[in-house]
Length: 187
Image (cartoon, rainbow, N blue to C red):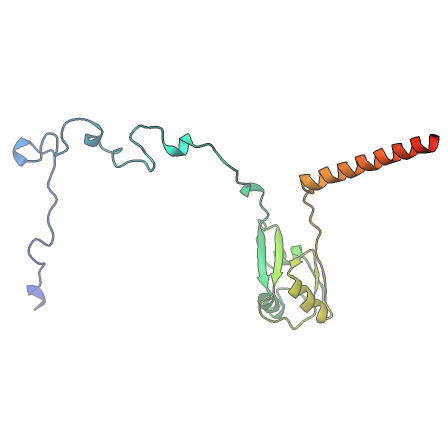
């Protein structure tokens, strides 16, 4: 039975050998015609966006924007459920203050991560003292209700250009008012 199994007729065709003499039917130019880019190996089906030698649209249009990925803060999110698991498995000590370094020592977070944020998913049963860790508003409420504490670090990023300009404008106005008041008093 098994020895009689075979493919259907012409199910597997052998590919035609190219460049094996004129009499083979696919000799000399191997069915590619004469010269030109289509006859060469490699670059015919070519580049994405290739427009036949015309300057491609991605070069004609100007560059816009930038990517600041190199300076992006990598944030690692941890749910309340996971936090409870880490405390239960004694990777984290609930009696001590838990900070970024305690997560590093427990190998929960890689050193390439800059910030840790705790999100409200699952339940937390133990009061914790968290320091220098970001959290959502609902998580802060849950931790404080459990008689725990959390201190969120302030944003150290420089203030926006707009805020700086506003401060400069206000300080200029105050100086101008002070000068005007002095002139009024001198009269």
